[in-house]
Image (cartoon, rainbow, N blue to C red):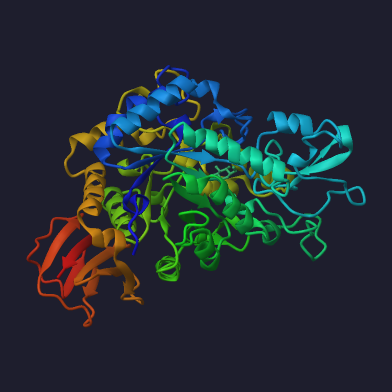
Length: 558
Ligand code: NOJ
């Protein structure tokens, strides 16, 4: 397999608003990130992915960009950004920026022009349509509840917004728009950026004619008409030809609704599009037919099926990205582990489970501390537009039960991931000297970076080791994945194989002891215990073991 630095890297995602506030205004900022550079270096990550820091009215916390080539005032200045990049590069790390070009803010100058008149030169930078029979042009709904169309009086037409109404979709059919986007990307890459994380990039091409979902509902989920649309590969190949291929960078596309067949195109090994994509399939395992807020318990065997499908289907065809949480998802230890008595063990187990698979691992800020979900009593303590729109639709307009909807927010809400980073046990967890834009999780006195750094057995130090192991063992990066003990109801176990070596990864996903029997087809002369989250001896017989709650072990077999 061809080697590449972005396959060997571990990425750390920063959500700037919640990372570290250097000036006491309650909002994290770029200088705050620079202050923590040694912390990131100590953890050992190679690449930092920065969620958007561009100018934005913050309807969706920076994912609504009003100027792609300027920094948001709350976050600092372009000089601060240059200094941060230098500090990253001085430490041998790299920076990837978020690229949000499925939509802009409605306060972007393109949109301000576009809405003025039908013959404005910027009109076709966005997707405008007349209404149909006094209603929206079609029945698609937005990711953030309600119609995906907004009526605009000035020209008596509607514009498409797959997210909030302050996030109008850009019209990729327009070559002028595409050229502007490529020029903007070039401008950032020339400033020294090492790669891009592309926001919902598989939504940029919409089905011809923007058809309604059949069935006659006024509002329906139109995903099939805008996810992985007809021209998306053409656009990405063009972007790759015009810009990406000219730089030694890494690219990862966020792709809701992409199958492994789609992924094999987006992340093809010839490198004509992107290096890898984020799948959502494992993130959907605890959603019922009603979508994200329709709660359903996830099952270990479903997780095995989905992860294994992505590992095997991309084998020899593409490259995986590996993640269990980010700024849009609940905290992984609360979702897939145990955030109570086995918080530490299960956080380490989940890290092991993920980092030993084939692909590039992503750590979301605070994951290395075992940060957990939060439960705020009052809806007012939540900030996220997705939460507030959903609540309005379901409870205020739809009459659903307040408590039931709050429960869904506690389990699935994006603000679970966005509470401020917990640095120490001082007021506001050391995140700010002011009043934080979103409340700190009350468990910060126990869960914080200072405690983690002081304790050699901490999750932080365990992650450090996971990262070091990746550097020392090619098999962790390049080995072939195979699931074993497929039917086991407690254990997720798999092997990686490279030349004459086998890596054996065994994870107990439950709170009970679990029996492990080594399958007969795995042969070896010697075994070495590379990492473990309980005290076990290397000499232990591995043909049959009893794993403690959330125990994880990785053996190198030769
Ligand atoms: C995905 C981003 O990760 C999310 O935070 C955002 O709300 C939407 N895309 C829209 O940009």
